[in-house]
Image 1 (cartoon, helix red, strand yellow):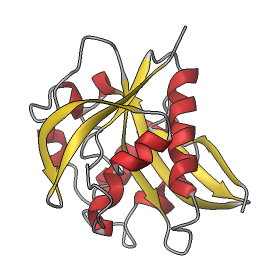
Image 2: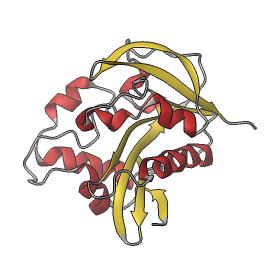
Image 3: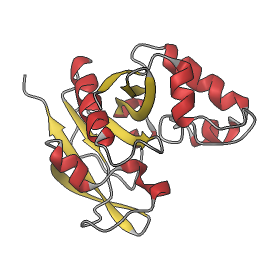
Image 4: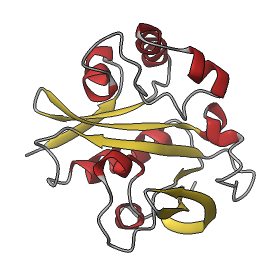
Length: 192
């Protein structure tokens, strides 16, 4: 399997990865952290959520990257400037410093493609995406699960091990806990 990762500029493929089976369903659409306002996140319901994602996909830069196995979309990673996300003011995940970092906060792989390294390709693609848009560094806030199994519904943040394998270094603790595991700040700084 030769996975290629590209900027998320095709709305239909983003919808395949993060959209609902029914257009009127209220699902995340990977907007929970992308929107600056929790009020906007609560008020966007049903098809309005997909419409907001379509707007983000049309922007430069788009809201993330997609992994492809040939013509089939098999994965998604949300990545953008931290300042453009709710992490800009998140009290549970502190800022390490004032650097204008980018963050990757959601990594999803389609069923049938899991366990084949797609998440590693997605994270590498997210790193390159951030670097190509001038990011001085990129952060993730994965669970520190010490190798224990993470429930699939909560595995979207990634694991410390995944980030370490991608070259990220531990940068600090958070007060955020997900699926019973503490989340940590992992950072990869780009050299000039």
